[in-house]
Amino acid sequence: MKKFKIIFVFILLLALSGGVYYLFFASYSSGYRVGTIIKMSNRGVVFKTHEGQLHTGGVTAGAEGELASTIWDFSVKRENEVVLNSISKAADEQKRVKLFYDEKFHQWSFFGDTKYFVTEVEILKPNKDSEPKPEIKEEVDPDDYQPNNENTMF
Image (tube, rainbow, N blue to C red; front, top):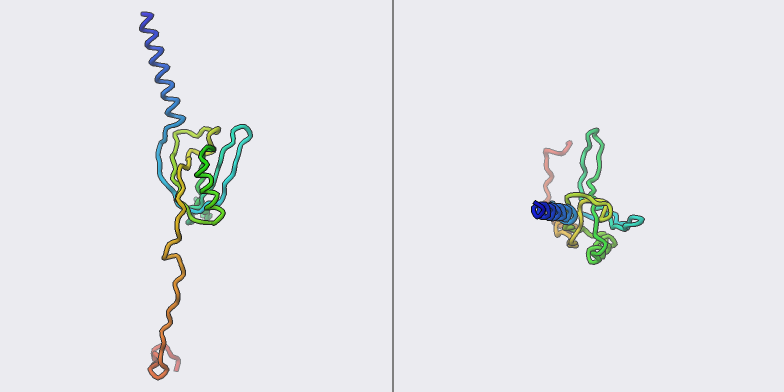
C-alpha cells in the first residue's frame, strides 16, 4: 500500500507540474496582424516588460454610435532583441508591418501585460496600388471639339 501511495503522489506531482508548464509556456493560437506601430514602451518596476500597440486600420462603431480606431495591444519577450529592434525600426520609419504572434492561455503579469507575444516582424513594402498614378491628359484638337448639347443652357 505504501508503494502505491508513493507512485500515486509521483504521478500527481508529474501531472501538476506538466499542467503548470503548459499554462506558462504553451500557445493557445498563433497568427499575424498587419498595421502600423503607434507605441512601444518598457514597463514595470520589478519585472520589466515590452508592450506595444498596433493600429490595424479601419474604424469601428461602438454600441452607442461612437467611432473608434482599431488598436491591438501586444507584448514582446525581453530576450527577443531581434523583434524589438525590427519594431523600433518600423516605428521610426512609419512603415506598415506584419507581426506574427503566439497567444498564450493565460496572461501572467511578469511576462507581459497581454496574452499576445510577438515572435517575428516583417516590414512590408508599399503597395503599387497605393502610390499616386500620374494623370494622363488627352490632347483635344480645338477644331474637333463638339460640345454636348444636352448639358448646355442655351
